[in-house]
Image (cartoon, rainbow, N blue to C red; front, side, top):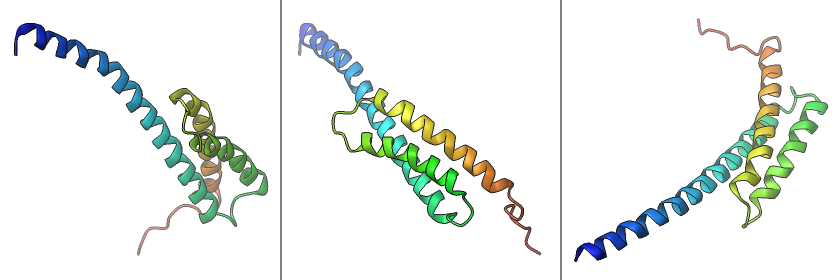
Length: 110
């Protein structure tokens, strides 16, 4: 393999590097969205009797757009970012409410 061929391969690899990063970023965004939806579903299921209807509706309203985007094959990384962030934020708020309820703290074993 001569130097010209090596240079061509290096240039091709460098060109693919940016494309690979975009693909990786998209996969990461999709995985984050998917795991956030799973976390939200689990929170709602595990705490159905402890979450107010208002909070439940708020979480469900934020889950829907993320699930919609997850169903798209042509979604971009940017499509996932805002809805996933909004879902994460409401999960934190509802989680804080859950853990601030009396008896929510774990009791030490005796």
